[in-house]
Image (cartoon, rainbow, N blue to C red; front, side):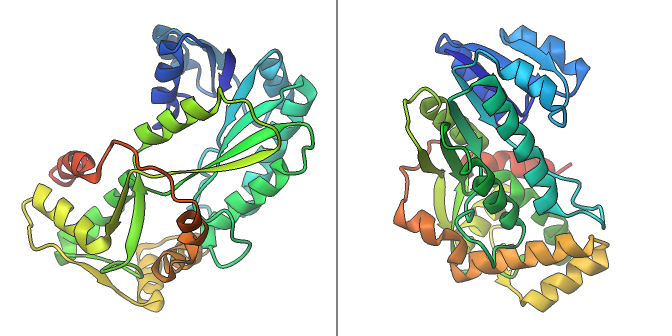
Length: 296
C-alpha cells in the first residue's frame, strides 16, 4: 500500500514509519523541516517537505495514497491568545479538504481519550472538535485512534518531586488511570491503517491500567525514592500552582478541567465501555527513561 504519514519523525510517527516499511508498504512522511529529509530517506521512506497549513501541498502529497495517517501537532499552549479548539479545527479542516480533493478514501486520525465528551474535558475539547470535522465527510472511512494518558507526560512531575518530595495533582492516589506508550500506539496504527473500513470506527490504545499510587511506587523505585507518594490536591490549589508558574490562563484552566475529568472517571467513561487489549510496553520500562530525566 501507498501510505502517507503526518507527524514527521515524532514519538509515534518514527516507529510507525519503521513498522510500515518493514511490512513492505511504500511510505511518505510529511515534515515541515527540510533538515529532516535525509533522516526520513535514510529509513527508506519518501520525504515530503512542506506545511500542513498549505492545503495545495497536502493535496498534491495525498494524491494516489491508499491511506493517510493524520495527527495535529501540539499548539503553542503558552500563547496567552491561543484558542486550541480553533487551531486544531483549522488544521483538521486542511486535512479534510486535501483528503477530499485528492480522492483519498481511508484515513486514520490520532485523536485522544475523552474525545467523546462535548464539555467538561478541558484541553481534550480540541479533539472532540476535530472528530466532528472528520464526521462531515460522507465518503471517507475514518478510524479515530484514541490513546490514553501518555507515559512521557509523567515527566512533568519531575520538578515537583525535586521541590516537594512528592507527586501532586487534582487526580492521583487510588484513581485508576490508563497509560500508553507511543510505540504501542504506532503498532496499533500500523495494524489499523491496512484494514478495510466503511464509515467510522473508534479504537482505543493503552499499555497499562494502574492506580496513581502504583505509578508513584514504580517511578519512586526507579529514582531511589521508594516511598514516593502521589497526593490529590484541589482544583483551586492546582490552578494556583500553574498560575504561579506563569502558565497561560487558558492552558492552566484547560489542564485543571482535564485532570478533574480523570479524577471523576468521566474522561475514561467511553474507554471503559470499549476497553482494548493492553500493549506490550509497560510503565516499568518507561521508568528507566523517567529516572534518566530525573537524574540529569
